[in-house]
Length: 186
Image (cartoon, rainbow, N blue to C red; front, side, top):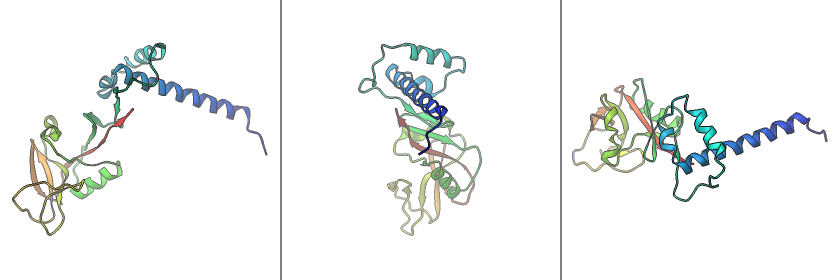
């Protein structure tokens, strides 16, 4: 059996050490409550100082104290509460928008309470995860839950939202959309 070259072992060791440092940094961020700052982005000149401070602080507990949490979202997603939101910049049909969210391992926005209406960004119409696909003519969210309203709508209509109001649109209309997924707890 051939032996691995020395540099393979060196690369493996450096990778392991890098992962340990990364884990320590994330743990320290969670313990210090720095996640609120990082969710909305630090200025690029603040990152080196923050990492130096965390790495040099050897008094941090490992693992983080119970109850502390750091929630992370993918790049270009916005963290709000326990969820990550991604906002499109182009216009597509409801079905195309739904499929795009699925490719991002997410779903179109599902609104179960008023706080989830994302008030400050909805000046244009955006697709949400609501549609009427069956002849039963009931509004259904993408997570399978019904929207309890009394007015029946036409089949093949899809839900959109504009200025905090849910609207019925023809599914082939092109609009922007919002994807959502659960934030990753670190």
